[in-house]
Length: 184
Image (cartoon, one colour):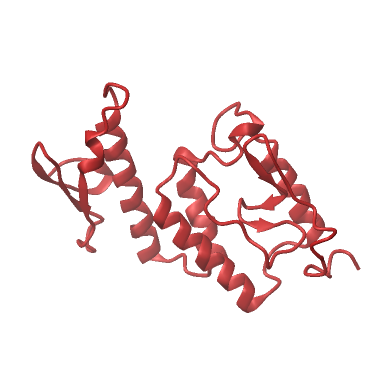
């Protein structure tokens, strides 16, 4: 049965396309839709890279360990096609934006954590802090002259586990930023 035989694909008949700034067919921007023991981590852009790569690796490893916790092949292909033609995280996005996530990355993180079976309160705090850092960094970039990348010198300390706060060390001033990116 085609739906049950997920890992029966040789390199000679593997369906893979790399055009229009996207890779297809991918389920959840990670797993090859036909061969779920093959993944393409790190393709998404306009994201916080290291948290995403870690979550992608955890979700992929959980799939390798436990096997068939993904939808069947037919369903993965349908969802991969919808994703490939959906324009990524942009409203009215183009197919070239398939791997763009931007603010849609937070829901994607939760989906990955669910696949990795580690979506709990601690993971929610981690994702919320990542989002607060993203929002703060975006605020620093807003209005900067093109190629002015002083915001890249900003450092974040995420060691406060109690209230989703992080500390910002920038060239201008040091401040503590709490939940939702507000200063305290």
